[in-house]
Image (cartoon, rainbow, N blue to C red; front, side):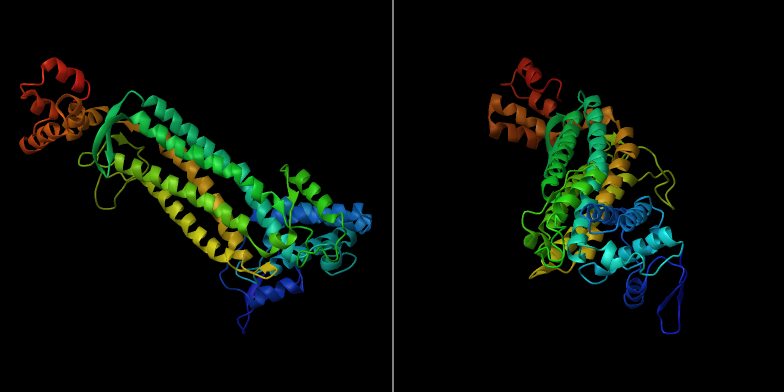
Length: 457
């Protein structure tokens, strides 16, 4: 790390003076060492993209000297390239506007830009963190813009791709399993036969709908508050700043962004973040359903459902030799629980918009980006380490159908519901199959019985 931290006698953080950040960052570190949590690198990288775009824009507008603007853009690029990651040291739990992290960014860029221009790190000349790096900006429009850019980039470049991979992997298994008959279950009780493939096609459809929901969120996340400055009216910024800086951001990210339709709404509320988290929660619920079903379908191997077998990844017990657990489905279910919990926090934070600013943005940003990254990782691992290695237990599937009382349903067109129910009851009491119990009925011919139950029972 480029800095050295020590706990002094007052319980404060002492910071090595060779660090790139300045006094505002040091005060934030000293006063708010709450959790030790930091934003992910992607968040700082995208805030640096805003700073680079702003420097280019302000230079083009004649508001910054070219050498100043160029130095700021070069310093911001260092952050984008991950070279100064360790300089971002402010705790996630801070002032609700994210000003502490924003000033951390301004000071790091100014310090590095001064080093580029003079060979001396730090200070406020010739590049000032507020007057130059932050020209035409405010924490109140930069921080929420960073959330939107980071979230949309992660969704498009990681989560959607991971979800597509998961869907493709499930579809491959669905086609492989499509000729394998098994018993369906409703209310966790035996129902009519389906194919194992049909069950997996259903899983794939869950993911497909989730992908469509993720794609639809781009409309909301692509709208940026940048240009509204402190309260939404754009004070202290050039009239063309928002349009030009968003054009630069779009160019630097490869994603089309646009200016907020109404800057007062865009800064006072965080509805797009709440909406995005809701989409992530929905996908988490879908993954929970799929992982839970796969976990139960593989239960056993001898005393459970046992209709599929999962890859053997690790010993399942410290005391029971040979036991194999459904590790990856349980990982996925835990990830989904975390995402659902994050959504609850984000929902509560979304209510923190008072007058012209939402003051719960840092924890919203942290939870949202964590949810996206967790879902992407879980989807990839689920596909690669579980779904792709699933094997059907064909004999078990066939045996379950043969024993199922639900086959009495197919007798209803021949003898009616009540008679079919009597046969099901008889089969249950005697331990017979439906095929055998129905065979004793004189008014059901063997040919009809074979037509109705043949291949099923």
